[in-house]
Image 1 (tube, rainbow, N blue to C red):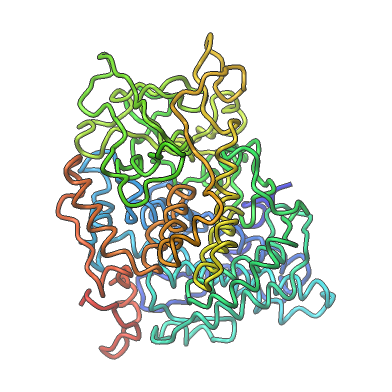
Image 2: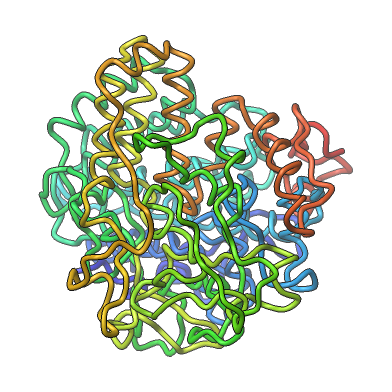
Length: 602
């Protein structure tokens, strides 16, 4: 069963007694009515705090309360990073209209400053996760009745989660203060952010890898191979490709999921985005989402993405955000052999219905396409999962398609046939039980390919990429037309809904491309496979290609929509988001702040 988000979440927060935003300048403030360490320093007490540390993964902590149950700003810290990773990376537009959540438009255009409230929302929420991990470790040290085996397990899980939270902070803000269980409460607010914390993140993941079990009884708990994968990902960010390869060699041959399934790509691509088929053989580290959990809220049901459903006359009620870009759609164009147009994809754009009313006729694109386009992007005339054909403009929020384009998101959408079980309607916008895969096996394979290419092992790099491409080339991954109102996912229609033409790279292709060409192909495959999953911006930054890629994106996409006109990525500044001004102010003592702002934001 899934580890419950709410089983002891309130207990965990009360025991932790820490907030990272308040009317005072302290980062750590004792909670009123907190339970004493003597009461909690038991097996059940430590496990309760650890469960609370897992609960913080959903990003719904709100200042002054245990959880952001109202849903008023939960999207600022959504663990899917749909704003910071996908919108800032060019996968998608903010969507909706210009007056709704305008702070996201500034982030998309890299014009946001340190006062933008989204940054503070993300910072304080992720640090709440850090705090809960530290509280667990601190209490664990005081508990005397826990067995050695359980002590190691609790410690390894807490350190994995702390490393995850710090990984989030590092890739977003770069300069972040390291606060662990050894730092006394009064000293927490004065910790500087001048240390490179990658070695500390490595150490936590290494400890978790060395000490976590291979399997767990609760699906939501992390295992040894999740830690290995996250450690390897950390190495990739640090450009330590040899160390990463060593781990990838083990992960791809020995790695298993928490439930003991050998890591392998699922036959059906969409199984990674369907609550009925989640926690499968591709799930490396997933944040568990639960619908209709008895709280009468959607806080456990991916509340951070509650805005990201088609609007207008759609069956989802709200809110028209997170619209895939035309640049992303064009990326799925393939040549006659089924290979991607890595360098020229925008020269042959995918036909769209922009400016065409839903009452007017429209014929979808007839050219060659990778089928992942129709599992990632909702476009007119194609089946929108099992909800019928996407009608186009009628599902796009006013002022219409000119603001953010003609497309709708898809990977976060629940199925019509199972909505009674996996959708949650306890708020003004939908929730869903679809897990968020922080790392899935396709991500691991493509990072492994990247490490091999960086080390000059181009045939092995191609082998990894072709595993991903072979999966999507299987006709089971085509979207099929409706026949007599049949569900296009049920396999009872035999006519593909589009001209799907996709293939693996032929033998020797990467070798002929050379290292740089092979890396470019791998980078593009990550764009296709992981689109709309919150990775793109962070990938572009670590590759050193963000300035060219995103400024080309602004030039192209601004001819289609109005929302990102004026956007510009500035090298030396835009690689990281600004340290929130609120946090700089809170760290001030005697007129001096312990936090240093990132370059370009002063």
